[in-house]
Length: 386
Ligand code: TYM
Image (cartoon, helix red, strand yellow):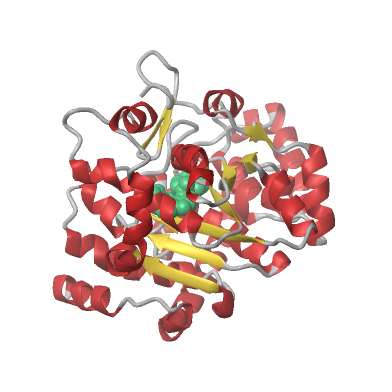
């Protein structure tokens, strides 16, 4: 994987795989993106009227052309947002994170949001072993989780590739003709065994960035950046803007500071449908920065930098800076024990999941407002699971 990092590298980040302990500064260099600096943050804060904690804390830490998005906004040209989800199964808390920043941006700037569900991509990834009927069904299930985030129905479009393809295919062809095999091989690490569906697929993920003749801003984790690199090299020749992107770090797995949460390791993640007992158990077992005994912990204190419970509060579950600082200080000094810290997180996760599930229930009646046409997918889901 020439551009994404491969053998001999201490960590790997591609759209399909995250391994090792990710060094985000190195990743910025490797991918050729730009760090989000204080000046840019100040500018967003001024235009938006406030700063979301995901930005303030540099969870979204890197970008491409975010400054130009703000220029466009100030000049009255506007912009639009695009993000997505690969429906390979139930969504975990990491997957929903970019959707929260997307919603915040929509609320603050009042812009259109396009959300792509790539049931085609997740079928084509053979190692997942999913049938097309399954990925189409998961697209409907995931659409409910995404709708629960609360996007503005008048300005949001959720679509899944196998259904909306008729409208995307002409543009996908225009994109595909500009991208050759050696290029996708270098960017994605494809080889002679890669099925030809995967080789065409990048064209499909690029298309929504060309839905409007305005600059597109894409909130996502950094693993998706390779697509935007290609998009940016061809968009102007098709008469469109180069996509802008804003990249997040990965919410760390519960099991420890390396890799990404993954379905193959259920203990590494908490899913949006997870029940209370299992949430309590997983957080209780999570990788900790505490000392082996309470006595030692009181004496030496814990290390919040590697403590997953603290990291989860930092990333998502404690947006209040003052409260987070207090937790951090108490943990570092030893006043707060690992078990106590884990309980703080557990209560917050449980409350979040409960609220999420209520909003997800309501979303069942609202999906049509996002013009999502999931009827077909719903039927398939029923056939498989009932
Ligand atoms: P998928 O389903 O792998 O991931 C959905 C979104 O979640 C981000 N993400 C994470 N963010 C924080 N912490 C994590 N641990 C974590 N794991 C995943 C992903 O970067 C993504 O933003 N091919 C895409 C679907 C897609 C898409 C897009 C994503 C199509 N068009 C446009 C972003 C923007 C995929 O399989 O995402």
